[in-house]
Length: 267
Image (cartoon, rainbow, N blue to C red; front, top):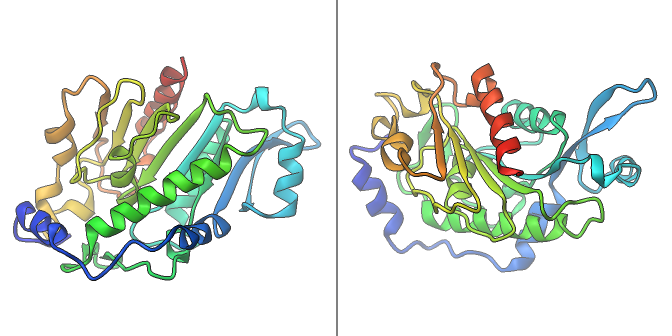
């Protein structure tokens, strides 16, 4: 986001906005447009990741055949400030987590009728007068609704529920609190909202050290902000892989850290 100082962003997002958080019926649309990623065993006894609409009949049939004991857990993953169903960053993130043995659900925030834009993805800039706090409330509302819905499935393990997010979605995840959540993961997050630090739901933040969204030409105040704000918190791990990609999960050290984090918080 291109803003003179970080304080200006807090001033802007703290002002009263014309955008109001829509009623719960609008949140249902984010679930109806959600994508589900799940690892299954094919006829040749190989693991493959299936993906598609959460309501797709072939996914429902596949999930009916899954032994819940073999499912490592459920992850609700929030996309960033721009998204479509073919978003390669979000798809690669969800497929990687699903390949580890988790069912990964990605709600579609942009299915909401009243969803304001907050960024220009081509320029890697936040929109100066976007209602950031309103959108963050919407994202957390979507997350809570998705948790309720996915835990209603018989194969979902309520004792192995995790939440993750990318960029704007990561900001929402680390500021989110729910006693059912075992761990929180943020990829490419700026951490401008801070985090709810809870020993029962540790946080892993993975943001590239030279993330282009937080460069000198975009939002320099956010560079290293996660480390400065959250470093030293006992329930938070901040990883800054050497690179510039916003999708910091593409780096091997990030993938290893995410896998280790999920194993650690499960026990």
